Length: 312
Image 1 (cartoon, rainbow, N blue to C red):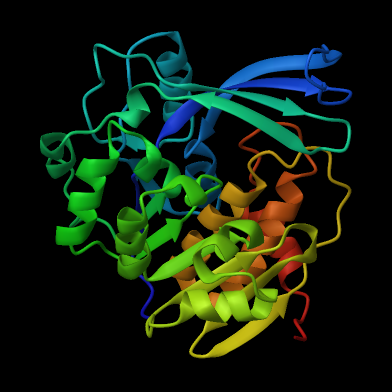
Image 2 (image 1 turned 180 degrees about the vertical axis):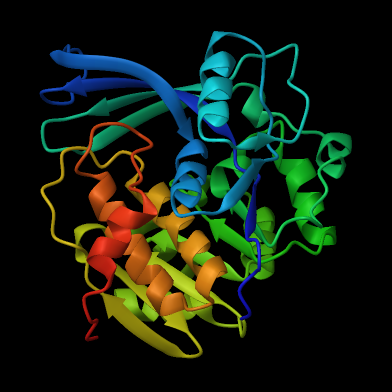
């Protein structure tokens, strides 16, 4: 694959406001958590965009942005990272929000409610020009929202999207099978964690799952994210396990999104999928050493770890 001269990413997955609670432990039903810290920050599709920007890629947001206090948090975050907003703001809805509880081990628990990002009409999506972009990112969340899934499904079926990367997301099992099939069929690359991937491919060992997801993508493949064990890169009928960078994780929120955005940015720059997967592993690992949902490291930070020779 020839790398783009000026790589640009079109993000169609929704951005939300994260209400982040750091807790000692996630409470059982009927109990209350002991909260040690709290903040409100952009999340959802925002995290992958920030990762791509940190890796040097231009990024534009084609999803919906509402009007209200949560939407203002998102708008300021997009502006802070120089992420272009392609559409007018929805005057009738605020942005959705997600309650995130992060425990002492860095693991996170979510409860989310959709807002403006969950609404997208056919005319609104047709207003987004895809020609200027070399890459497109879409998550399963966008196909799950009742207010956007039909328009997005029709758009996927009839639009020649540049280098579509599909992240099934944790809601993959709840997606309409027909919509899921369209997204999987149109994607050049699929990036998923092991649990998500097994919903699509079936219960098999991780390398076989990665190969299954990559099948039928002669110019692409699949990245199977496996947490602290790294990832599996499948392309051309071959699969490579790439170990994770060993770190002391304090917050895993957004690590998967960091992996996706970093992989796209480095692949668009170099055309080398193995290097891009190694880059994404390092970026995702470093992101877990910092508190916050969008903590992707800079390109310089990743390159400082990347030059170590890789032996599969």
